[in-house]
Length: 201
Image (cartoon, rainbow, N blue to C red; front, side):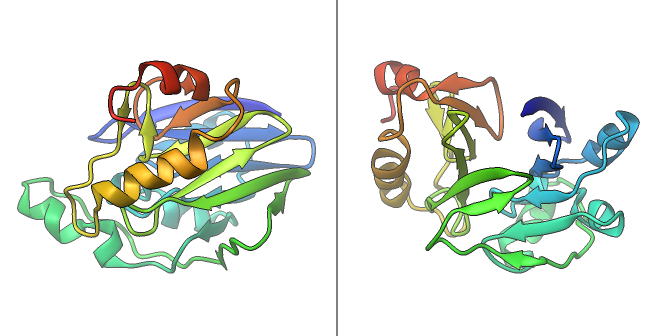
């Protein structure tokens, strides 16, 4: 399993490409990631969305047009994307509507590209926030729930600091300490580092 990262869009959002002999998976779709993957000669078979805030889904439609299967907590929603709020802030964004091919089932692990992926619904930053844990590889893609030395903001529509902190404590910090954490923004970290050094948890 090879992991490559891309950062793009106004909010410098991370997208992660996972390449395996049995297929390729992309975590989130910030602006420009489709062109980046194509430039590497990589076909994206599956896209896993950590949540639908606009900066994480700007390239979903173009990826899906290319044959990528989209997996998410819920179907496309302008409310989840926060497009109206972003425009009110002066961020002139417009996300092309897209279809979600597969609604995630949290009762069992997801199996894609020869990998087992454990799913956790961790609301608080967004009502649809999901993390993806690859236990055999000791890797977690945390979206905007847990950052290096930080956590996601909880003051956006649908946010809840209580839900976010409880979810991080119960579902993320209980993972093995040497689990690498790849967040939606900023550098990677580890569960052990965040247990010791993160002032918010």
